[in-house]
Structures are given as C-alpha cells and as structure tokens.
Amino acid sequence: MTKKKIKEPKSLIAENRRARFDYAVEETFEAGVSLLGTEVKALRQGKANIAESYVAIEGTDAVLVNANIPIYAPAAQFNHQPTRPRRLLLKRREINKLIGETQRKGRTIVALKLYFNDRGKVKLLIGAATGKDQRDKRDTVKKRDWNKQKARLLREKG
Image (cartoon, rainbow, N blue to C red; front, side, top):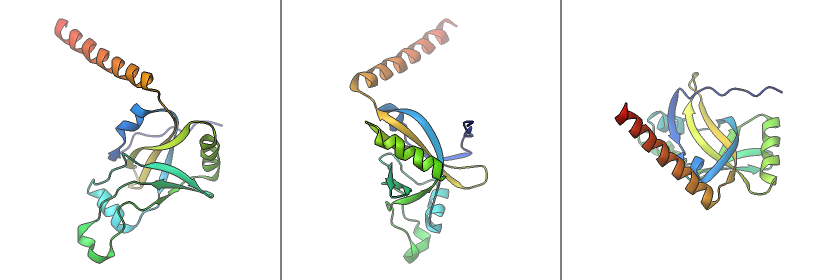
C-alpha cells in the first residue's frame, strides 16, 4: 500500500503547536469534518481553537472533542454550540487503524492543524502519537536553542 502524500494546507485556520512539543507524532491522517453552516462561516473568519482538542473513537466513528469554534454573530438564533463534538470523515480502514493505535499502550490521537484545502473544504490533520517524557521535552528545547544560536553565529560571521 502506498502512503498518500498530504499537501500543504492552502489556508491555515488553526494549528496546535503544543502537540508537537508534548507528543511524538508517528503517523498523520487527513480527515474531513462534519460541520454546520454557521461553523463554516466562523471558520472563514479565521476563528477557531484546537489547542486542547483530541480525537476519540466512539463506536465506529471518530469524533473531534473539545475543539472551540466560536459563535458566528450574524446568525443570531440559528447558531451552534462552540465546543460540541464533531464527527470526522475518515475511511473505514483509517478508522480501524486509529482504533488499533489507541489500543496500544500510551497512544493517543491529537489534532494538529485545521485548514481549508484547495477545494475549499475544511480538513483536519490528526496524528497518532505517544506522550514525550520530561527529558525528551528538554532535549527538544536544547536543540531548538542551539539551532537559534547557530543561525545567529552564522549570520554574524557571515
């Protein structure tokens, strides 16, 4: 089976930058999101937060939990709940693979990026990940700082 190459997002709505720091992401999937009309309009305004969201498997469906899409003000009484669970649109094989990943020790599914693809559809990049230890996080910080210093030195020496 060939691995599908995920294109770079056309227009990024929200990114969970903390996820790459807290987790070692091993495999990524691109999922569609089942949304209401007012949610899409709020996303087009660039308002969303997926920092504390995760993906749960409920029965045979994958569900995005705790993602905050704020209320779209012009819709008045026909609005949505900001943090309602949202169904993810994945193929059966991908859902089965995610179920297998979550049953292994220490694995979780985190939301990484929310974006519009080139056809204007809302997509969510999710990753199967394991939590990092405190020492792994320190190593990440050390590498990041060293790369900044190295770039600064090369810029100065030139």
